[in-house]
Image 1: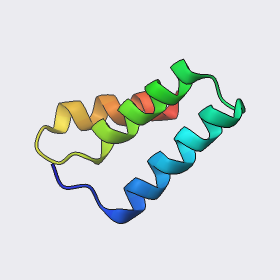
Image 2: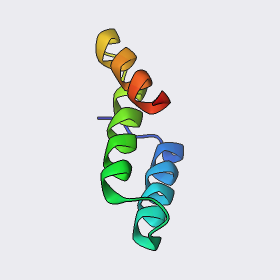
Image 3: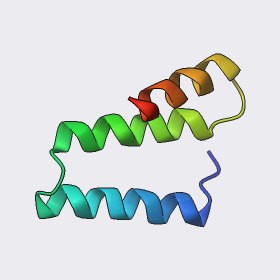
Image 4: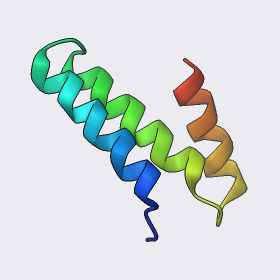
Length: 56
């Protein structure tokens, strides 16, 4: 898996928000999975599902 630096920053901020209590951990997990799926390029259906989760 190829993770770009801007994605690492996104995940770091997301974990920081979870650690600070700004966002609940289940929400952190769902957003992280949605972001991961929407950024992948191999399987278009999974990307679409990830985009839908991210938008929710």
